[in-house]
Each structure stands twice: as structure tokens, then as C-alpha cells.
Length: 398
Image (cartoon, rainbow, N blue to C red; front, side, top):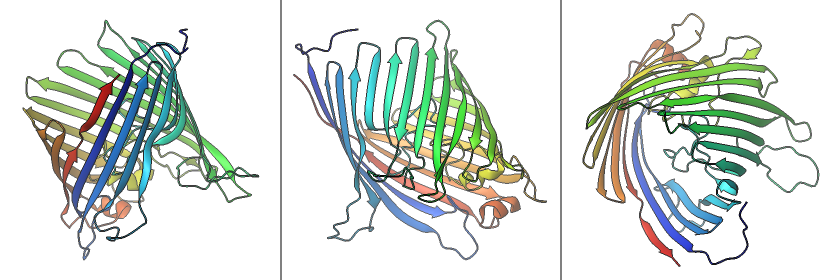
């Protein structure tokens, strides 16, 4: 192990900013629209300023963030919505071992269970300690987090805004340099509080599984499987799982085609929870851009999808299709939920300025009306337009 004594070392300082503004027309996203309901229109905005400092074995990053909607605050409103999206320190013990502590994003593999959720205006972060080892082939991370709302003198009840009281995770990733394959193993233990202060109890949910990528020339095959057990808020045992498989092929040099299938188990109306919980991952990245699916995942999901992506110079266009069914039947209704079509395009105006936009529509069924609300006889659609300005303001070495 190398000594961390004070020696002559280079200092690096970078300052990055992001201004992201997105306007949305919502006529059926998140929750299907009903007869007589009007569409919603709004503009949300994110402003971030990040400072990163590195010197030898030390790295420190602090990123301030303000999020909100146009018109949410008055001209002279004093109730700001500023927070820190990142505030962490990282200490390298040698070229392989490190410890990182503080507010940080946790993004692993395809972000199915732990992700930065960059689509959301605020994103996801965790206050945690991360211990790690990394070399050319292997990465091993251990994550520890514990949340409280006050410096209690007595009692350990947590009823705060974070979705968990404590979390422990272990992630191992292997990348071969001879064969084009990557594989990960993940274990996450999440403790969630139930009851009330003075009568609370922490229930633990364990999720474990693997993520595999095989990347021969012009192809990418991806598969993932996760099993979930433990107890939910009501004290019921959990017995759930999810599985996915996806294939992509490059149609040289401009186009990529993809197809895949996801399965999430659902409740079987017994004294066990059969519905799989994707924890702190991004539904938006997997189950349709309209974000309709999370509202009824207690019934589980079959998702058959296909897509095409085209890139010409600074223009990128993506077209996706999803066919949804529930994994479990609800009463006498069928499993079919409907079809979703997502169109997305982006154009890089400058190296740090990108304009993006999209349009999606959902063609639902009577089952969709029952489990998610709305009326499948009405045209359900969603459109958005976003400007992202992400410059590096300052970078220096001394």
C-alpha cells in the first residue's frame, strides 16, 4: 500500500454547470386520461453547479441543484428549492482500494435497481458510504446507508422522506479482456419502517441477481435476473423475481436494431407478496416513456419490445414499441394492457448544447382502464421538448 504522506502532487479543479429546461404536454402519461379530463402543460427546470477537486489520493465533489416548475414561485418568493445533488469525498488508499462518503449517485449496470434517474428533474441520490476495489478485470463495491430525520436522544423510528431506513449493498463486476463479456452480481438489503413512532418495526427486503452482457462484433446480448425475498410493510413474506433478455445489432454504420422481453412477477392473491419491486432503478428507461406501468405492477408485467435507432452526424432518432400484458389476471379481465409507441430525437447544436424532443402514444384496453384508470377509447399521448446546456466553465491544473 502506498503512503499518503504529503508530497508534491498535481492539483486539478473543474467547474461544470447544467441548465436543463423541459416543456411537457401530458394527455395520458403517468396516469391515463379519463373522459372529460383536460390535458396538462408545464415547463420544469434543473440548474446544477458542480465543483470537483482532485489531488493525488483525494477527490472531493460538491454539486448544488435547484429544481422546479415555471410559475411555481412568485417573482419575490423566498422559499427556494435548492439542495445538494452531490457532496462527497473520495480517498484512494492505493491504486485499487478506495472509500467514498457523502451524498452521491449510485448507478450500477443498466440502472435497473440502482440508478441516477437522470430523466427525473431532480434525479436520485443517496447519503452513503461506499467502499471499493477496482483493477483491470474486477470491481467490488460495498455500500452502507442509514437515514434519520433528527439527532434522536431516544428511539430509532424513521418516518422520513427517503424510501428506506437503511440499506446495504454488495456489487461485483467482471470484465474479460479476451472474451467480449461483462458480468455483474448484485445483492441489496433494504430496511423499511412500518408502524408509528414508539411502535415501529423495520422490515427487510433482500434482492439478488446477475446482469450479463456479451458483445461480439456488431452485436450486444444482454440478460438479467433478480430474485427478491424478505418481508413487506404488512409482515407478509416476499417471493418475487424479474428476468429480461435483449439483443441489439448494428446495421453499419448508421442504424441499430433491438428487441427484447422483460418479465416481472405479480401478486397471486395469497398471503405472500409476488410483485417484484425494482427499488431505486428507472422504470422510465425500460417500461415505456409514458411511465404508465409503475402504477399497476402489483399484477406483474410481460413487456415485449422492439426498437430502431438512427444516428447521422449530430442527429439521433429512436423509435420504440412495447406490447404490455399483466403477469397475473385481475378477476375475469384479460391480461392484455395495450401497445405503446415512443419516438425520440436529439440534435447537438454545440458541443455542450443539445435539443431533444419526443412523442408517445398508448393504445390501451379495457384491462388497462381497470388497473390504471382512464379510458382506452380516448387518444392517450404525451409530447416533450427539452434544451440541455452543459458547459465546463473552468478547468485548471497546478
